[in-house]
Each structure stands twice: as C-alpha cells, then as structure tokens.
Length: 174
Image (cartoon, rainbow, N blue to C red; front, side):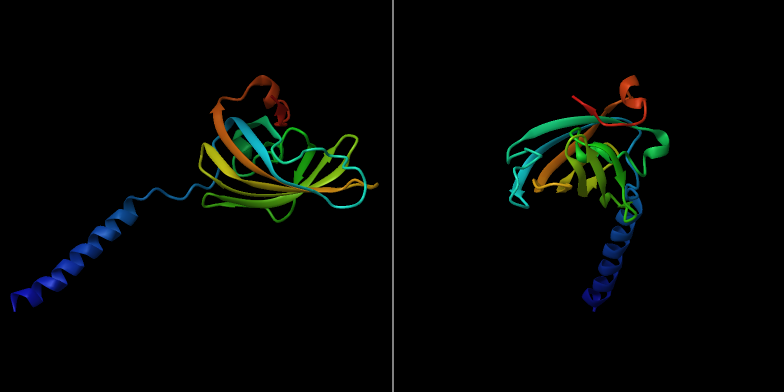
C-alpha cells in the first residue's frame, strides 16, 4: 500500500522539477547584440547556371571575411552585407525577413559592380554574439555568365563598432 502512495508523489515531484527547470531557462534570443561583427565564409558549392563564362569566380573552397557594425537600432535586422559577404554592395533584405528565437531566415538582393544583381538567401542560427549557417546566391545578369553558389557562414561579435564600419553600417572588406 505504501508503494502505491509513493508512486504518485514521486511523479508529482518529477513534474515540479521539470516546471522549475523551464522557469529558469533563459528566454529565446530575439536579436543580435549591437557592436562590431566579423563574418567568415567558405564556398561549399559552385556551378554555372548558363553557358557563358562565369562573371563571378568563387570556386569551391574560396574563403573570405567581412565586418560590419550592427547599430542599436539594427539589432533585430542587422545589415544584410554582414551575412552576404564583402564581395557584394548595396544589399537589401526582402519582405520575407524572419529573425526570432535564435533563427534567421530571409532573402534579398545585392549588387556587385561589373557583375549585376545577386539574389541571396540566408539561413542561420544565432545567439546574441554569434551566428552560423548558409548563404545561397544566384546571379541574375543581363548577359551570360550566371552562377549558383552556396557558402558556409560563421560570425561573431568582436567588440564595439569601429568608426569605418559605423558609417552607414556597410560591410567592410578585411
């Protein structure tokens, strides 16, 4: 009989501990911390999308980095150039922007001088001070030479914004 009474009590104690753990868990991250950020990337897939000579030459294994300032007003929507890389200018997020609960999924357009338009899709997990994920890019050129490429991206907050990056929050080549 005692065993039957103790089983429900043990089950209640276990539930109470689980509820306590959930209450102590930190809330999900909704934004990146303001400051200077550095991103590194490595091309993991590259293929030509048409018969022309590729206008963007970034074969598998190409590595690079970029830095950007994420201002206080941009923590929930950081500059797209931070995720797309320093090879691209004038990047703008599209309307399908999603950044919540440690997850960023969005797409947008970038321009590259002498190349044309580049469609970029970002999928990344983030904390307040780091991110990791993928960026997929497709060039949309007025001529032949379109390519499709994918990169693995990693980023981290490195401190306060530098004066060069704070001007316009643009990605800066390292």
